[in-house]
Image 1 (cartoon, rainbow, N blue to C red):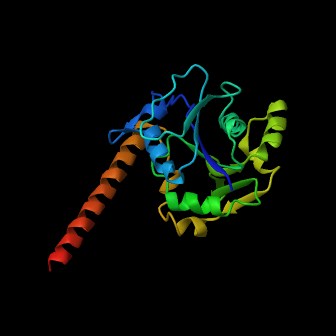
Image 2: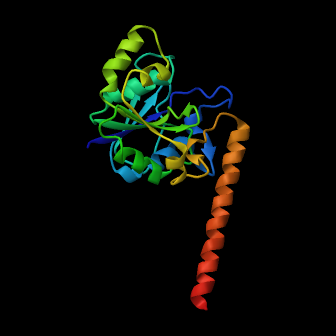
Image 3: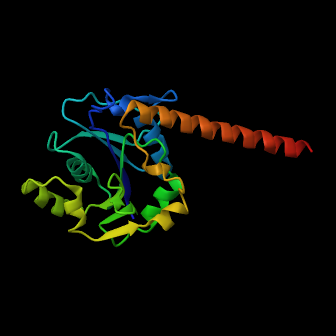
Length: 217
């Protein structure tokens, strides 16, 4: 099964007041952090930006391609369409650039179960995580039809294709805190994310100290 990743990085970040992709969190841009999380797949990563945006700089990963939205200013469905159009892979992991806590185990599981479906997508209650999903190239024809009708809602696409939903119990086995779906929209979100990183770093440090003490004993 051929796999690529598509990162949607065209959002203007109006509520945040800055271009989201380049906002720094613990010394690393949100886009850089997302690319690092996706690098475990060792496959092409397509970054979709808006028309007129400066191509963002990403270090440490060579299999990158930056493309521009096919229809400017029309939202994430166009971003997904643009990524699929430029991808050579049958299955494409689509995420937003402002999701700093992607879980590689959950992403890997989603890819494992995606064969035979057009979209594989987590769902918490009635909320489908549309920008944390696997989209097949087979969606292209349906999306083209929707865009031709002037319809830019991802919900419409999900009603027209074969969808595999991951329900809460499945998600919980990999990510019980649901941090995979945490995204940055405001300064408060950014501060919360920074706190979560510090919390996890502190936990890792305490576990490391505890382990070294045990070894000495």
